[in-house]
Structures are given as structure tokens and as C-alpha cells.
Amino acid sequence: MDQLNQNLRLSLFNFASGEGIIAPRLSVDIAKVLSMIRFSLILLSGLVLLISSSFAQTDREQAIIDRLSPIGSVCMAGEACAQAAVATASLGPRSAEDIYNTSCMACHLTGAANAPLFGNVEQWAPRIAKGKDALYASVFNGIEVNGVLAMPVNGLCLDCSQDELRAVVDYMVSATEQ
Image (tube, rainbow, N blue to C red):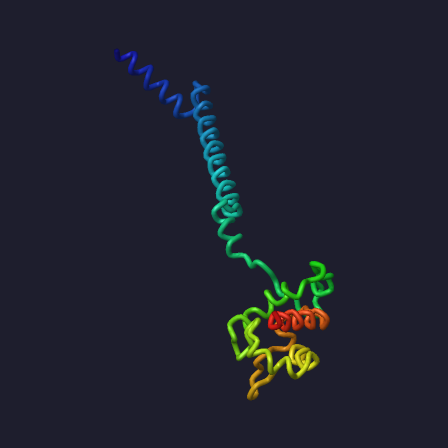
């Protein structure tokens, strides 16, 4: 037994001093190197994951950004965007009834600002007595009562031609004649 203990002590001494047995010491060095490589790879992959997640947006974040983004922009005269051609839709000729329903009905159906009601003979009679030219002029120029614009210029139809406005006046006058 003493011999075994002495051999064991001798081999441990040789191992610790670097003499004799080389293979176990080499495996310890390899283990340290492999451990350092493994730690470096874990650290590197964590760093890559951290960097990529800080730049990437989730679907939820992108949805929030889309909801908060402006739906349009303002283009001022002189800017490059003001030079672009504006697309306009041509709806073709509009009927007097269509123009009345979109621009005139709000006042002439409710009597707002003392507008004569559509089809009301009593309210239209004094105006018709002045002649159609006077009616046309009131549409083209607007009507001012006591310093307040009671009927706006072009009767709120800012994209109507004078021919279209005349047709609307004729349409409204004909409603009183029925």
C-alpha cells in the first residue's frame, strides 16, 4: 500500500511539475482553449442577436408606426412637389338638379339665411319679378344683407361654370311654375 501511495505522489508531482506525463496536461490546455472558444461564440451570438433586435421592428411596432404616419403632405408654391401635374377627374356634364343637390340644397331646402325655399312660389315671386338677369347676377356676385354675405358667390359651387349656374337658376325657377 505504501508503494502505491508513493507511486501516486510521484506521478502527481511529475504531473504538476510538467515532467513525465505530457498527455494529461495537454488535454487540460485544450479544454481551456475550447472553453474560451465556446464562451466567445456564445458572447458573439448574443451580441449579434442584440444588435439585430435593436434595428428590427416587430409587426406590432410597424402597425403603430403606420397608424401614426401622416396621410398626406403639404406642398407650397415654389417647391418641387408643386411642379407635378395635378390629376383632375372629368365627370362630364352635370345636370342642374345634380348641382342643386350638391351645392344649393343646404340653404334652399331649409331657408338658411332667408334663402327662398325650393318650389315656394310666394318666396320666389318677388325675385322672379326682377328678371332672370337679376337672379343670375345674385348667383354670380352673391347677396349681401346688412353687411353679411347671405348668399355666397357662385352659390357655393366653386367649380361651376356660369352656364351651369344659369341652368341651376332656371331649374329652381321652373320648380315654382309647376
